[in-house]
Length: 334
Image (cartoon, rainbow, N blue to C red; front, side, top):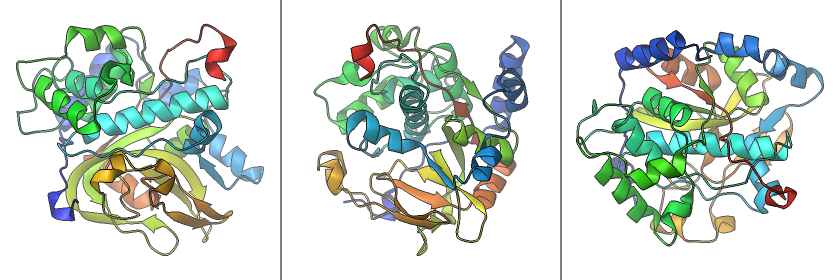
């Protein structure tokens, strides 16, 4: 069983690298900044959250699409070796894919996204070994990896435990090693939109419109209060993913965060988070303006302004779209 002092954080704060990635992508014409992306998607993104609130919707919980697609929630991540950047990005890609199929009726396959190739490509092919052997990864490099190279599915790792997959990821992500050709080939063509939301209002709109938002800053998530909402916790660089937006009991808009430490923060993560029936994993009950809501395993509410301040001052946030896994038949999206 884990204890808090054994948690491993793997996000690396590197503002210069983030700026370089944004500049490089902007120069080639990518809609990498949220304002540009919003202009190109004016019909679906700007003002989405305010329109929803005006119509009486008080919460958007994107991971509920897992229930409609699979009949159950997906298992929470359980990182052990500082792979949180790839976990957060994989959660974002997965959630945006599930939303695209369930809500937008896009003809995409409901595949399960693998975190390991995101980790190795972010560190090596796209991070150019800037992170040392004992470090994690830069979120901007992960966003560039899934945008430029794509994502692979868990079919690559059939029959392997989550721990074994993570050990492979760490092995191939070491400086001078690199992502196996088979992993790169499996990701090829399955690219995802990724862009940087410059304001908290745009971040709300992203979530309301179905774009999950992987994020990172210098604090872990604190213990939830009686309403299921957390403030900043202890100091420690960490990556997670925003997967929902809601109005709290005081009328303020807050965010839903998906962690990468198993059932945390509902309880301390345990080894059997990887194997026990997902229905039995403890979950947070959120009390918000719309009533009570049991969140997906590994999720909790967080104070939006507090987390956004940290992202702005010394962090990252990248909205992500669904990967291109096109369905060949209607049966593949059922």
